[in-house]
Image (cartoon, rainbow, N blue to C red):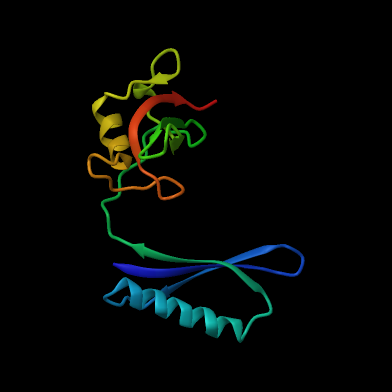
Amino acid sequence: MTVKYSLTMIDAYGRNRSMVVEAVEVALLVDQVTALENVINQLAGVTDLGLIRADLIYVGKGTPFAVTAGANRDTGATFSGLIYEGDGKKASAKVPGIKPALVNADGTITLTQADVEDWIELYAEATPHSLFLSDGETIDSWLRGTLDK
């Protein structure tokens, strides 16, 4: 596995500049965060730019898959559900380039289709979840899937 730091900086004119650097991987996450903080401190000594974001990225060696002929990144889907312990609040997860075969004639996506269900259950609290939504939330139950406009 490879570790990278993504650093987003801003200049006095409000323009962002990002840089990604590869880092030495250490065993514990807390030590990796400490190493990132050290890089941030050293960067502050050599740049006038402000740092607005620093991300720690672990790059795995997953198995890539090929693009399908006619695939379109602008054709996506949104899946909406109720947030786990969210008192009825809803959240959504998006998928770019949804496969046309998964979309019904009316633009809905059946949640019980095997491939769809396997994907959205990664966010479900009960499964147990593997992914979080934007604010560290998980889903209690999925309500619908729709093709994006």
